Amino acid sequence: MAREFSKKVRAEAFLRCGGKCQTCGSVLKVGEGEYDHIVPYALSEDSTLSNCQVLCVPCHRGEGAKTSDDIKAISKAKRNWLKHTGAWPKSKSKIKSRGFPKSREALNARERT
Image (tube, rainbow, N blue to C red; front, side, top):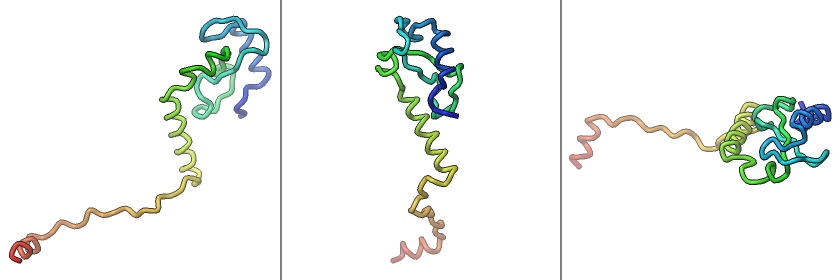
């Protein structure tokens, strides 16, 4: 599915919102609004009408457009996807052992010297 909304979805979303920003309620002219995914595309891969909202430019690009939680969740989803597909680089360091517990005889021999 495409990351962008189709023309049909954008038209239906604009009619649904009544020509107003769905966050602040300011009146939008045709072609002035921006279409945003409610659930970020990177997490849902959903470009349907139910995941579309029409926003004015200040609401879409202003503070709080993406929260730090969104950014963390998107980054984690990308890392998991890359690991799943084998594109994430494997660690070059080997797993280190804690070692074996020392026997009492070895500890006593050290204390004597």
